[in-house]
Amino acid sequence: MVELNKSMMQPPLSSPIPGQHLTAPLGDRPWQRPSEFGTPEEALDFYLPRLTEDDFSRQLLDTMESGVPITTIANSLQLASVMEGKHSIDVGILVLPVLMETMAYMGDVAGIDYKMGTELKSQGISEPTKNKIIQKLKGKMETEEDEEPMVEVAVMEEMEEDTTPTEEKGGLMSRRV
Image (tube, rainbow, N blue to C red; front, side, top):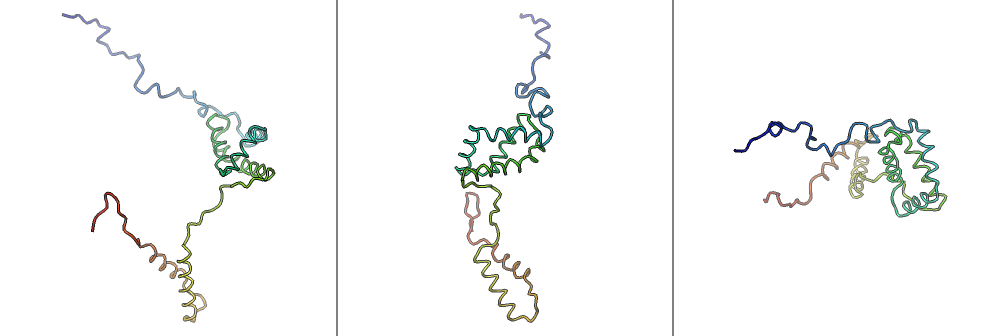
């Protein structure tokens, strides 16, 4: 018969818990400590000399010329600095417009056709729908004696007509009729 000693019967309480190797002690990560720059002015004093360095400015202008929006570049730059513990996220958000304008100025001086990334995309009513609404409104204005036609009602009626699906969606789990 095998004899078990007492040390084999007790569970190892000093061993690491499962998943402990995936975590770090509190305060060990840069974003868990106080940041180096507490104000937007201090953060700008950090950023602006780096933006004008030859290597960085050459890479920045190449990236802008390739079509990457300035908003994406500036946001990536400030987010990386937040992760490194240079400044907090709120200071980064306050500094972001200044970084974008500085990059745009650098692009203007270099003669680069860049994208700001702040352009609004048209998500409104399609052109044929707009034409239909205008024709209906013109017809109503000619027939009605009121000076103010019911524009909102006509637009809502037209929007309801256009929201009906024109084709059936056929997917793997769709119903068959």
